[in-house]
Amino acid sequence: MTDLNNVPHIRVTPPGPESIRWHGRAEKHMKGYSSQVGLFPVVFEKGEGNVIIDVDGNTYIDFSSGIYCNSTGHCHPKVVEKIKEYAGKLLNCHDFTTPIKTMFLEKMASFLPGNLSGIQLYCGGSEAVEAALRTVRTVKGGKYEMFSFWGDWHGKTGASMSLSSLGGTVFGPRSAGCHLAPVPDCYRCPFKLSYPGCELTCADVLEGMIDNEGTGAQAAFIMEPVQGYSGAVVYRDEIFTRISEICSARDMLLVVDEVLTGMGRTGKMFCVEHYDLEPDVIVFGKGTAGGFPLSGIAVKEEYSQSLEKMSASTTYGGNPLACAAAYATLEVFEEENLLENVNRVGAYIMERLVKMKETHRIIGDVRGKGLLLAIDLVKDKNTREPFKEAGRMVYKKAFSKGVAWIPAENVLRLAPPLIMTEKLAEKALEIIDESIWEAEKHFSC
Ligand SMILES: Cc1ncc(COP(=O)(O)O)c(C=O)c1O
Image (cartoon, rainbow, N blue to C red; front, top):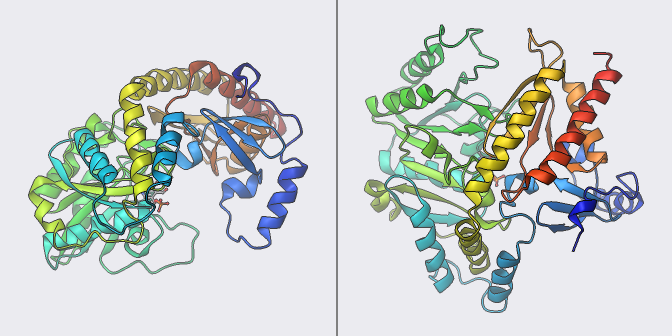
C-alpha cells in the first residue's frame, strides 16, 4: 500500500527508462494515441485509490480518473471484490437476464432523476449515444433531424460524431440532418456579447436554427449539460429553461448526454438535477462502473414502450462482470457518501483555483462543477486569446512533478476520482501553481 504522505513521488524523471521501453514496443503497433499520451508517454502499471503508479515506480496524484471514469478511485476494494466474485461465475450470456444485472438495474433505477425508467445497457459512451438517437427516431417515427451545440462531444460513431465538434478532423461531411448551434459559452461568447445585456441571443439563435435549418423533421436536441471535452464549459441556468421551452414548443425530444457529467461527477448523481431540466432520454457511461466498461440509456416512462421496438441486444452490453462492477460502484456511492465528498473537495479546489486566477497573468478563466474542473490559459486576459503553447507546457511540467491530468490545448482539465481528499488535492494544486509560474517565466509573461 502506497504511503500517501509520500505521494507524489518521482524516483526517476518521467517518462523513465521502463516507460520508454514499454511505450516504444507498444508504439510499433498501436497508432493514434491521444494528445494526453502523445505529450507525456508514461506507462502506467497500477492504481490505488487517488494514486496512479508508473512502471518506473513513480507515483502520481490522479487528476484524470482514466478519462473521467474511475469514480470510486483506482481498484476500489469493494468493486474489485465484486468483479472477482463474478469473474468465476459467468462472463457472457448475451442479453439474458442475470441476477447481478437485475440487481444493478434496480439500483440504477433508484438513482435516476425525474420519471426516467426504461433502461438499455451498452459498453461505451458513443454506443449508448447511438442508442439514444435510435430511441428518438423510434419515438418520433420518421423524423430524424437533430441539433446540438458547437464544442459538444458525443462520440466517434456515425451519428454521435455528426453531432460533435469535429474541429481539426478529416471526417466530414456530417450525417444528413445533424446540425450544431453556437454554444452559450459566456467566457468566449460566439456573438461577442456579455451577459445579461445579451438577453440570451444564443437561445434565440438556437431557436432560429432549428426552425430555419430544419425541414419539418426536427426530432431532438442533444446536449452535454456541462461540456466536458471542451473544458468544463458551464452554462447559465436560464439556458436550460429556454432549451426545454424550445423543445417542447416543437415537440422535440431532449436528450441529455451525461456520459461524462453523470454518476456524481458534478456533485449531484446526474448533472440535470442542478437545473430546471427534465430530459426525455439520458445517456450514462464513464464513471458508472468505477472504470469498467458499462454505459446505457434511460428514457422517460412514456417512452419505455418504444424501447421494446428497439432491441437491446449487443455482444457485451450488460455483461455480468460490468454489471457486478457497476453494482458495487453504486453501493460505494451510498456507503461512502461520495456526493458529499465531491461537493466539499470540489468547492475546496475551486476556491484555490479562483485565488490562482487572481495571481497568474495567464489564467483567463477557472470553471466547472463538482469535480469537473478546468483552467483556461490565455495570452491576454482582455482578448482571451487561447495560450495553447502554455497549456501544453504546464500540462507536461505538472505531470513530470506528479500530477496525472488531462490537457486540451489551452484548457487544462482536472478530473480527480470522486474520493479525492483535500490533502492530496492541495498537493496537486501546489504543483499546478508552480508549473504555471514556470511557464509564465518561460514565456516572459
Ligand atoms: C459527453 C460524452 N459523450 C459521449 C462520449 C463517448 O464515449 P466513449 O468514448 O466511451 O465512446 C464521451 C467521451 O468522451 C463524452 O465525453
